[in-house]
Amino acid sequence: MDLPVMPPVKPMLAKSVAKIPPGMQYEAKWDGFRAIVFRDGAEVELGSRTGKPLTRYFPELVAALRERVPSRCVLDGEIVIAREGRLDFDALTERIHPADSRVRQLAERTPAWFVAFDLLALDDESVLDVALADRRTLLARALAGVTPPVHLAPATTDAERAGRWFEQYEGAGLDGVIAKPLTLPYLQNERAMFKIKHERTADVVVAGYRFHKSGPVVGSLLLGLYDDRGTLQHVGVSAAFAMKRREELIGELEPLRMADAAGHPWAAWTEESAHEGARLPGAPSRWSGKKDLSWVPLRPERVAEVAYDHMENGARFRHTARFRRWRADRTPRSCTYAQLEEPVGYDLAEVFGRGE
Image (cartoon, rainbow, N blue to C red; front, side):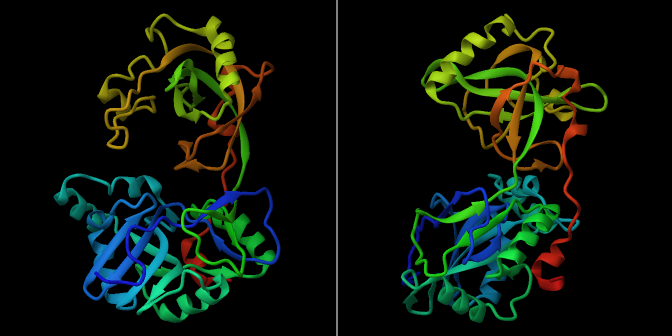
C-alpha cells in the first residue's frame, strides 16, 4: 500500500457544546465504530480510532469498499449495524471476536455498513490541508451514486434543518449532531469539531461502587433501575468525579456498605449463568480482558439523579452517566424504567435522504 496519507491515522475529534452553533456544516452523530478506510487498488485496510486495525472483523465491508469507493483514497467514517431501521451497537460489539469462523458467520447474519463523512486523500493527493467545505465537495463527487452497504453521510449548512435532525434522528439510534467549521482543515487527534448530544436525567439506585485505580477512593458508582418484575437491573455507572469528591463519597456511602454481597440484589454476579437472565455488574466481556471487575456492595437505599444521553436497547445507559445530586426525597423502589423517555421511532432510510 502506497497512499499520500498512510496508516495509522488518528481521526479528528469533537468537543461537547450545549447548543448547535451557527454557520457550520452539520451531520448526524453516528453511534458505531469510528474507522479510517485506506484503499490502494485491491488493498483495503480499516483503522480504528486508536490506530489498531479493524479489517479482519468486517470482511463484508472490505469486499464492498473494494467495489464501491475510488481505487486510491482515504476516507473517514463510521462502521454501524442496523436492525429494523435502527442502529444496533450491541450487534456491532459482537463483531470483535477472536474466532475467524464466528466473524464470518456474523458478517452474514448482521452485515455492517460504512458511513463516509470525510475525505483525507484521493488518487495521489492528500487533502488534509483543504478546507472542510471543499473536502465535502470532493467526497460527494467521489461517492456519487454509491450503493449500500457504503453510504455518504447526509450533510447540511442549514442550522434549522440540523435542529430537526437532532430531534428526529435519535429515534433511529443516532445520538446527536456534529457541527464542523467550513474552513476547517483535517486536524488529526484534535477536538476541532463540535458535538451536540441529547441529555436527560433519571433517578437511579446506587447499589455499589468500584475503587479508583489510584487507591481506596470511589472510582465509579454502580447504578440500578427496577424493572416491571421488581428486579433491580444494573444499568451503568457514574465515574467522573474530582479526587476530593471521590474521597468524600467513601465516607458518605460507608453507612450503606455491606460486609459481602450475600442478600444483595446482585449477589450472583460472579456466576456466569446469572447474567443470562438479568443485568448484573461484572458481566463477562472480551472487552474487559483481565480487568478487575470486583465491586463493593451497598444496601440499595440511596437514590441519585444522573444525566444520560440515551439508552442502549432500552436496557442500559449507552455511555457513562453524569452524577448530578442525591435525591433524599425519592425512594429506591420509585426508580423504575417507566421514568425514562423513549424517542419517537424514525427509520434509517429517512436519514439517508429518502425523506427530507
